[in-house]
Image 1 (cartoon, one colour):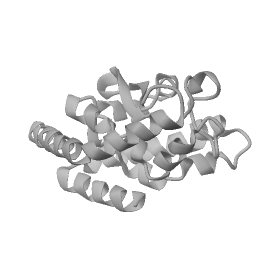
Image 2: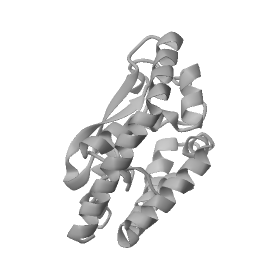
Image 3: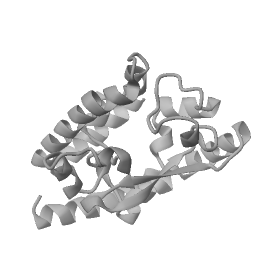
Image 4: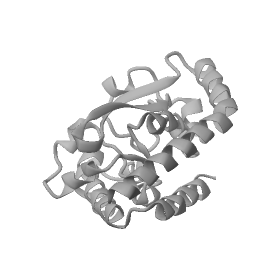
Length: 201
């Protein structure tokens, strides 16, 4: 991506994320109340992810699991994971739990569209070619997110979910992410954003 495209993409991300936060603020309030009423714990779930150039940052999500869920299981969610709360199940179904990432976009940690950021544990497994996905800002949605919208259900049907994720799903996602980087432009981003919204409705 050339310098001009980078500037256009960042300006687009900043403006759209700011407008999105303002418009969706009533939903943020309603969801926050629902989470607090449904289960004990914080409203937001923060997790270390690897961003552009390998820099780590905290990704923001609405909490959909019980407190300290990562200490009770793996960093991937499988099928009808018993760590997921009642409200969390609804939020995940419509991807509402991802909305706080608009603040990540506003800050510059993420882009609206780009390779989904992984946890350090899985990034450490990337080969040299796969690490090229770290050359761009990670995103809220991408081609791989659309293909694997039902990833939790897929993992719930295999004998070793983590092994399948690493050897099959993650490899395919990285391949798709590298393809995205090659054709990356604002118009393609708008197309993926619209497609993501349609898929989540």
